Image (tube, rainbow, N blue to C red; front, side):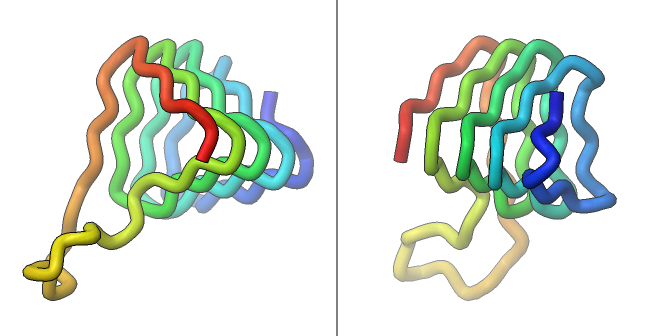
Length: 89
């Protein structure tokens, strides 16, 4: 179920049984596997692959620019394996 207040980018691909909470944001080039849950206010910014059965907690932000001082704007990707639990914030 995708909550009506969630924002899903048209290039994102969510499996049919993914649950997306209120005010969650799923950005461009994001793939979310089956049986996964995105809690309220979770943000998956861009270029992220989320495996099956993943739980992403309230207010979590994934897929933003790396916090490495050497980062100069190159394209980056995040991959989260099956069954991972990412707690709130």
